[in-house]
Image (cartoon, rainbow, N blue to C red; front, side, top):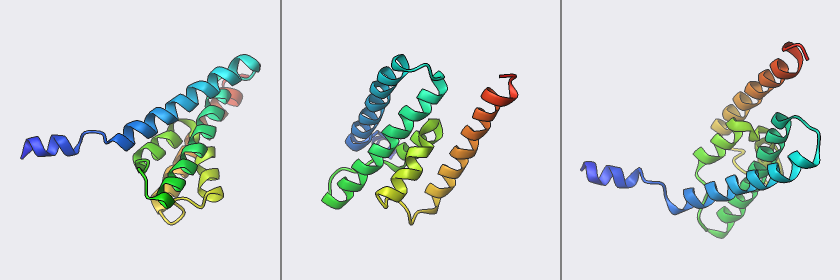
Length: 128
């Protein structure tokens, strides 16, 4: 039975595909935006993750309508937590995606508060 359990815990093709797309978008956006601006690395990080998260929400919504491979909800939550919370909020309301799932509101709210606290500390409380 333990063999069966380890197989079900393996990442699926959808998990790998969406994770690669998400990370690829983040890297491309960061590589494009950061050298072209004088913005803080953290602000560029948030923008990159938010744009990529928004796009993955859109891709997942399109996949849901077409009956294709779906993005794992855990990936959407992790993307919000590491900095894509603004894209998550926007994706929920623009694409009307995951709006009936309360866990998405909770994760996005927690992510927003977490990054608001980081922004406050880094840019205002740390003597800047």
